[in-house]
Image 1 (spheres, rainbow, N blue to C red):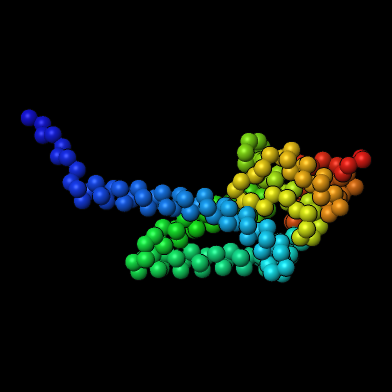
Image 2 (spheres, one colour; image 1 turned 45 degrees about the vertical axis):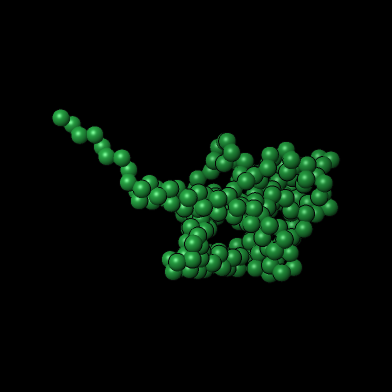
Length: 201
């Protein structure tokens, strides 16, 4: 006669609930980090305080690294510190640190990899949301300097038509760099013609 499985013990149930809560904290941190990254990108990196590092990301890169990579170092140290304090017993800092680390990995894959091709192979999305994400960030780099840029998020991309309208509204800061109306990406190659030629052409 087959024995029926014994019901979960209270300790097992509470452990399962705790794992679920910890997973939700990690997920919530990843989601909140997109808002934090947007704010830091828009008002710190493109502001007078952080432009000194971030300017290198809006210029042609020479070599493998750029000064802007120091932001990744800062956030990596922050994630490590949160995890360390969490491991020392301060709940839920470990889960927040893991969420920050997960966001950093997603940022590297999307921003450094897909958008700026900072890995040793080419992988360009041909459609869907990922292509929109790439187009949105290319439009972010379609402006000279720190003012007049659009699309400051890294994992959320507004619809391309809205970004086109914002670039049109920021026309004074929008300077085409190619004879065909295309914009040069930060790595020196022409950006996709997601925004089209300048008005009047």
